[in-house]
Length: 570
Ligand SMILES: Nc1ncnc2c1ncn2[C@@H]1O[C@H](COP(=O)(O)OP(=O)(O)OP(=O)(O)O)[C@@H](O)[C@H]1O
Ligand SMILES: [Mg+2]
Ligand SMILES: [Zn+2]
Figure (cartoon, rainbow, N blue to C red):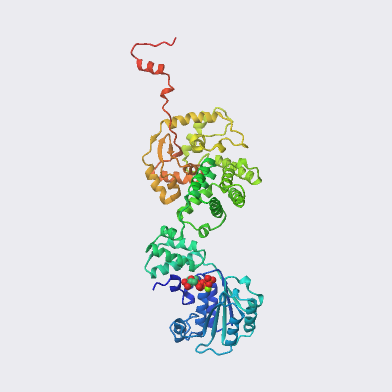
């Protein structure tokens, strides 16, 4: 018969117990020193080893050949406890035996000497379930237990125990087991069970299990039912962790301030019968993950997601300030609270998304703060992107002289045709973003001589663009560096012109990546490594053939050049 893994692999010694060294070491020391207590209390969250340690301790106090504080597992007593022939270890589940009569039985029994063992051990699981009378009855025995009796009480809810009980026990708090310790135990069990478990799959199980080894082993069981080759994909299937692409899309809509896109996604999900309140809740969780990424030291350890998702979340978090994220979560949770009251859930969610995608509408302080950080970011971007560290000195000189030549207004800050400029002045990027284009609070940028000059320059650059064949190599070299970035550019093509690589893609995220200084640097580095050349980056724009705009007369004139025929325009 198949035995579930967590039963089969219940640790038999303290040394096998994972992640509770603060407890097992103390117990082993007490056992080797012969300093035993008569009442122990094991508390802590579910599936962390309380019952397991109680059983080991019950064996260890009676073992005839104790090994460094661990039960030997081989002596008459150890084997007798294992096969149930030794009756001096009494396990009682207080959840189903919670009345005073159940405890009275124990109280009467403790007077008698154990049959085979040195100590009769009572393991009372879920002790917080006892009735008040039952507690009182137990208390008397705990106050003056006979020499040959040991109580081990276990509970997940220590706050429900009366102080009188607490003060009579030596208390051990079981911690949530760290993901690495869970993963190691899973890998150990998998090896013994002869299944292939990848390390990243083990870590994913560990993060889903949230500190409980029993849950982790149950999930491993479910994975084994699917395949004996367990990778992250198998774990995701077994745990029902299907990747929620739409959450990333919705968040991207907010980041890009693309209201239309966000509403489209909501419409699609709605027609697929997605529950809107649930969607709102998931979105809050999504932003919470971004918040943790920004504020916690080791966010990878607490976030339940695959490496891919983590990387993409990191990318999104890069675009937001902590204040933005908190503001988003706040707007969404207020929408969530209102759901189910009057206005339809869908409308609530839509209103929230419109607010988020266009902070200008929202007059609250938080919204103002979000607007300010957005502005600050833009300013910072403007400064830091002037001269990128990887730009060669040559490049910089060229840019400087070029901009001097072309800047007609001397006071204008020195700006060559750099990538931010080409990016920001390109309609490709700001298209579909009405909010950014016409912000209510921001003064419309005054068209500068610079801008005019640049757009003429751009025409030229776009017009001369030639397909860039090494782009596929660049993307494949990006993959090992950042799968998220490589994915964003996967459907793109690139053109080369005047020191620029112009990228053609419909993926908005790709342009957002280009706008971020450090990401852009990463991409440029890979391009340099792949091609051996330093390029500036920008979006590609198809330039219409201007045939129709050229004067037909002019064309005719050109055609007749040198033929002796002359056309006059009168
Ligand atoms: N710290 C641990 N080290 C190794 N295995 C563990 C550990 N904790 C739990 N397990 C595994 O999970 C199973 C259940 O553990 P156990 O019964 O000790 O948990 P518990 O803390 O008593 O949980 P509950 O509060 O639900 O009673 C064990 O059989 C074992 O396989
Ligand atoms: Mg238990
Ligand atoms: Zn033994």
